[in-house]
Amino acid sequence: MAVREIIRMGHPTLRQEARALTEAEVRDAAFSRLITDMRDTLHSSGGIGLAAPQINEPIQVAVIEISDPASRYGEIPLIPFSIYVNPVIEVITSESRGFWEGCLSVPGLRGFVERPQHIRVTYRNEHFAPQTMELTDFAATVFQHEFDHLKGILYLDRMTDMTRLAFEEEFMQFQLDA
Ligand code: ZN
Image (spheres, protein in one colour):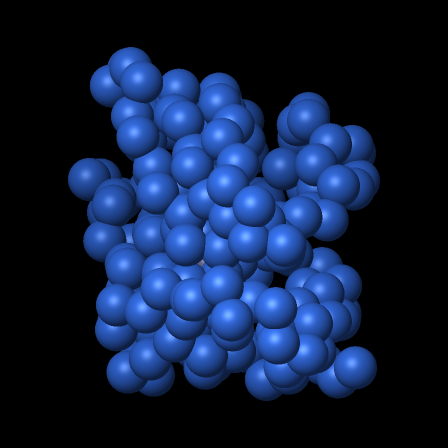
């Protein structure tokens, strides 16, 4: 187990489309080691999601864990540590809602992003078994943010109003109630 370096915006891997994993790769011991590294890295960073490209592995896997109900993101549903391989998002309703997002690869900044708020996600779990789930509200935003990383997309690309981009300190001072 190891905490891996999180690469930052400007690193070319973050702008590359990640490749899908095969069943053989997911069943390989190297995959378990990668997941352990991703969990350690996520925990040490205090984030709620991490995509493999953020540790310079351009493959389609992301991990998400929301364990602290009183987190800095406000009131959100708890999601136990889980692994998403080769995920595909389908928008169920295009009705959008905006949330302030941050990203471990864009440290120190927060930006307001509007995204569809009801999605269906189809993916493989750590046993390569097919799974489907529906997500709404903030959870829908979290999944879209993480899975965008697998396409080389950052949340900044999704912003439509750049006046709502702020440093974390100024965000806490001025934007929190806005
Ligand atoms: Zn991110």
